[in-house]
Length: 237
Image 1: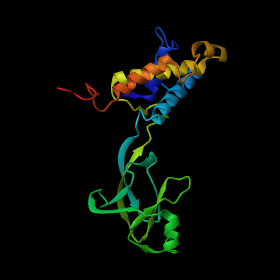
Image 2: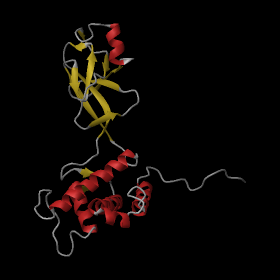
Image 3: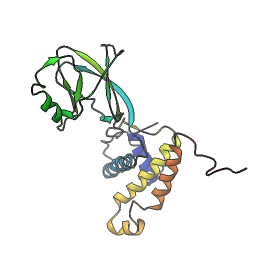
């Protein structure tokens, strides 16, 4: 495991910013190498975002329990999307133990619900459905409007981006981390280079850079959940 700060230090070492007896950067607010730290942070964040966008790095799966006592409830701050294609909310007690009941999204969403029950935002009772109320805030709305306090567990995918020094880069082994840092260091060099230097160092651009492509292929093999098949095609006796 590696932190965001550790990854930034490794990038600075690979590019020669930290060399010899230079101490590691201990904080992003360090007054030494200010510009380099800024570029290294951006390189790590951009490279991680690219891997997530290409689905080489998956969002982490986790769970949370909502305390529902009003129509609108805010989801976890790191919520990206539900884990399942058809999400179910499992009713629990206040301690998180499932009761064996669940509710699903209202078929057709809020638009359909509005046509079926014009008082859907007023009628109270035990929730029987949830729906997406829209807007920029990640919330769920409940129908009926809760007449008390209820608890529901949901499974979701959470954000794996890094923003503060102690955030963990989402790789497990040292080899995975080192391979990722190699890619981030190459992006770091690209970001710091002048237009003329970029043309010389990256003649086909960053996306087709052979160093990054080789490292990505290596990382893809390292991240396999299962070993690749040893043989392909049919076997004939």
